[in-house]
Image 1 (cartoon, rainbow, N blue to C red):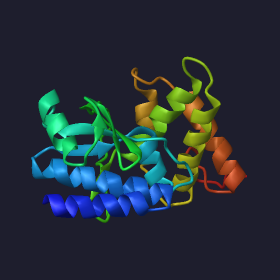
Image 2: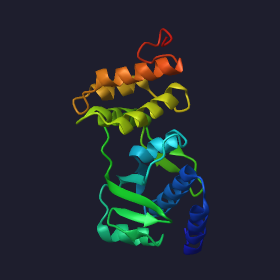
Image 3: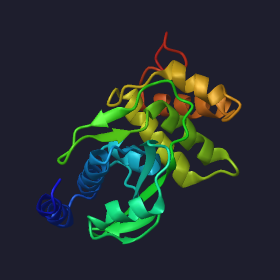
Amino acid sequence: MNPELIQTALGDITAESDPTLKHLKLASLVSAVFRERGIELVVVGGSAIEFYTEGAYVSGDIDMCLVTPPRLDIRTRQELMGQFAARGGPRSWQVAGQYVDILGELETLGRTPFNDLDAPYGPVRLINPEELIVERVLISVYPQRDEPAEACARKLIAVALSNQVAVDWTEVRRLAALPEYRILPQLEKVVNDVAHELGKFNPNHPERPSD
């Protein structure tokens, strides 16, 4: 992507009034420039939830992890982010009025594939929703209850139960039961609660409606 196209894209991103679309466009632009250098990024955390829920939850920044290569030296980070006239570093920058964090190598225990989301400047890769659900439920209960994290988890579960996002619930329960998470009862409770509130089929008891 040449400098003129990058500047045009940055102008478009700066002018965008919808916060979720602004984040998506910026994630798309950053992904495209890194991808041209053979570096694949994946959106994680609250940023991924924002895209999965189509803005029902809005993240304060864009969190991205490295898929390939597993290591990225500081100079290369600064060089690549410098193409966006970014300020900051070596892991967090301000670009077009938004914050972008390029974190370390992705840690994942999931077996389901990432999702690629079509976006204006190229695809944006999202961490699989199964691990995202389990991760957010863990944050909501340990080391202590975190109500904002719980609300975030419930929004992601709600879009999954409404079939807006395809989720393998067997994989969700497998992850929740792993020693690294150990939150299967807590996960099942919040899924039960959301399914009941929405009147949706409960994936923990698929043979009957939640009510």
